[in-house]
Image (cartoon, rainbow, N blue to C red; front, side):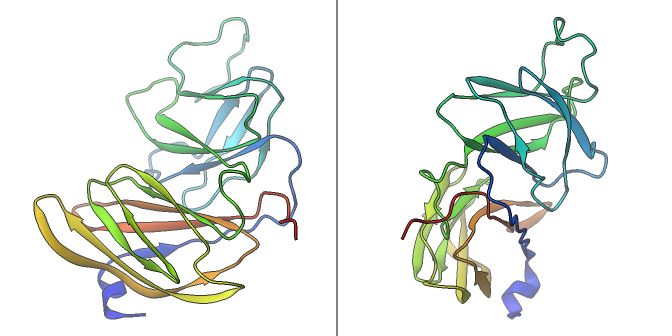
Length: 230
């Protein structure tokens, strides 16, 4: 690993899901989950309440969802009476036309119903194909550079889809830089080699790294989608 990657924390986490999921479904990412946060919550999809896992450094299992327009809500403890659902639960809407979702959680200790915030991102194959990457910049810093053959520049608090970094499976070079508001200098973030698997799509998060100036990177691979048609 290069000297630059020794200075910052550039963490790549790859998870594989071998099965092809045909029903509507979601997977959960609890980014930077505090040690004090719950490891499970209860998800209510309007028809069923189930306990869901909140892994700290991984994608959750795949949870199947019913058809129709859904309002997905999280609870710390399961409601005992579905006719009297507590108000204030973190929630996101899932349109009938959306097949799969990523539910991205962040900590919110002030919410007593469930101590999280939740954001929904479509995981449909029309939005993100196998081999592609979806980058989320959750910081106030601008991040850019090259991943394999692809160049990108992500503004603060935005997301960007990036094409396949190379053809076929194998390693590819990564050079990332960041800038700070009011400072035009490029600061090195990561210089390394990552592994590409064209069978999966990748979620990549750029998040703050405590009091350190350089952000932190998390990458998750997801194999949940139909095979490409040749």
